Length: 258
Image (tube, rainbow, N blue to C red):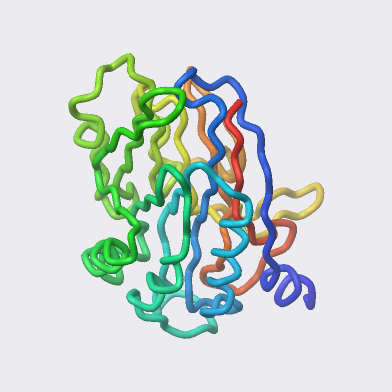
């Protein structure tokens, strides 16, 4: 109980992953993923956000992606306190990467105020992509990055996010929940998400008792390859409902695309 309700959820680490079999336009990229910050939840105060930023910047990623749920909904979960969106954005402002810092909106953010998140992040130099894409210039050529709205709150529109891109142009897609993955076209060569928290608890011989996904443990965490497409689900940093983590420590995910 001490470990699950204090030691593990209060910890923080950078976890490195190698993601194989990427198209040429994605190979060699190093991407830091910050998922489910849930600022204001137990153990996630302003000081913890600063630690997340320092850990991320120290890894020197080419690109930083924030996959939603930056806030803690007051009515959902025990403990913690409310941290205003402008304060969260202020503490995330020092994030730096050569290709930029991009974000999508999560379900908790939409319940709070998606417009305020977009405005505050924009003022902090973080671009929110809501069913939009950008093309980034890299030494390997153009990189198409598409941010897709949250499926859970019915804000998703993959068609709009990819409009204008050739069907055979590999795109790096990111969205909040992995449940959207089966609906995405093969244009999304790699999709990066959060939302599940990896179930927050992973028990020996049992697995993850609760995963907030319609697919159960199928898209709970890590690298999944299906139907010629790839998915990476970050287990994230904060907690929701209960302030517990066991076997799923808070992490900034650092992906090296091979």
